[in-house]
Image (cartoon, rainbow, N blue to C red; front, top):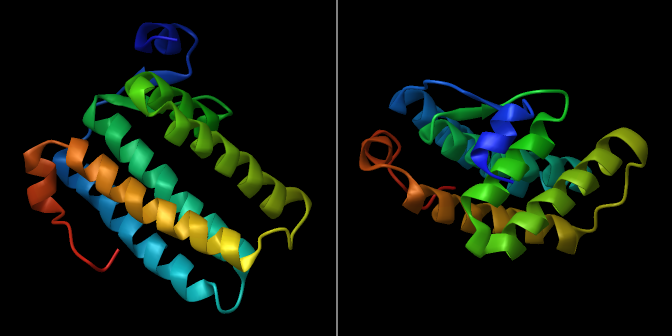
Length: 152
């Protein structure tokens, strides 16, 4: 599905976002990844959910850098649909985003206690790799405002 189709189906809309706002989303993602790691000692479900949120914020940061934002009831779903279109060469990574979304929904809304320590650590590691992948695709002015560091 093309960006035009996503616009027509009202899954996304055009938006103007400043580089500073996008850099703020990168900072949230770094904070959430650190918080998720700390929570693995006390609450695996929330560690997973917070790492997922880091991934979501990174996806939205990229969307904003391209002049879009998700809309509609399924904003998380629509965000990842956008990412599918943006990165068709990374289809395995994008399919994982949708799987993480479903797992997060189940864990938070339906059946707590499903996340293992291994699974929580894997999603945190994925969030770190995803940060690097998205960061490298962002314009330099955003990278200057949110320098990459080792404290993700």
